[in-house]
Length: 244
Image (cartoon, rainbow, N blue to C red; front, side):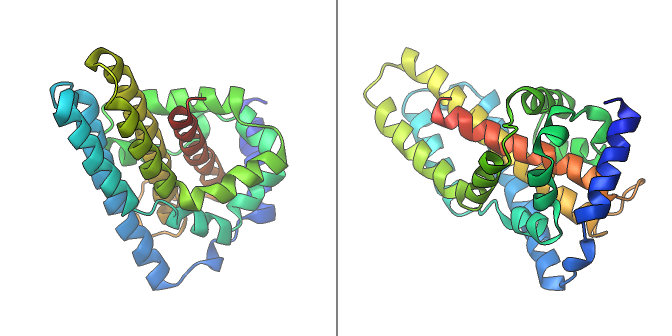
């Protein structure tokens, strides 16, 4: 598809599925806003650890990961998913999995996603989005059943991440520092992608609901594309943590 064809396709898909009015409760919006603040805070911590190799060495590195696991276990990452499900975006992704993900491109993604990631500690958000777009094009399954199953696992992803970090910490204690460093980087990279996906997804929902002022108001089409990036980030990060 060309950029224009993809835009028309997303617009038609949104007209069929996306209903922002299905979520207008002030408490739901407030929950999303709180979630955005909490996830962004943890994300900044992860990015700092990725850049600070000294803090990730020896006992200091193990202690930093233990603290991070605790933070993650207390930071739900799924409010945006429930919101996405309620307004119909999850159904749109499941109905047109191959077309959405295999054609995903930067031009379809709102610039606000870049700002969300930048404020969450990502030094080069454009690069992160480029990597996720490539991952979506090549590796997101074209099976609606497979994507549906993976989407339903997202609500518990913060617990899975925390448990995975705990398991890695136990293994790291028996390894040399030379062996530990690549594994620590892999863990932090995976967590970073998951948090980046949750941030893009949460910001996307706030834009769609009109609770964030933006030069270009969110549309159903851009919401679907942004949700594609969010889901890709979480699935890619989960794959990193599982060693896939």
